[in-house]
Length: 85
Ligand SMILES: [Zn+2]
Image (cartoon, rainbow, N blue to C red; front, side):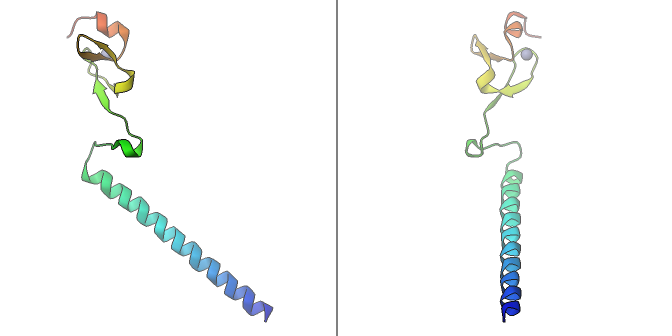
């Protein structure tokens, strides 16, 4: 009788493990589909941050790290002083 309970418990564990794997794969596919729907778009809800480009060299970087001068964004203080190309 204890052998039967052992195999029954093992079968239940295997079923739960397979269901958890399937749910994780579906969640991953849903996230990938959402990302494919809007290429380049990063929603702030997913931890994304707005990006901006340097007015001098064109480098893209997080807007929170921008050096702002005369209404323009620069990647570093040195590029603020250099003339626009
Ligand atoms: Zn720059």
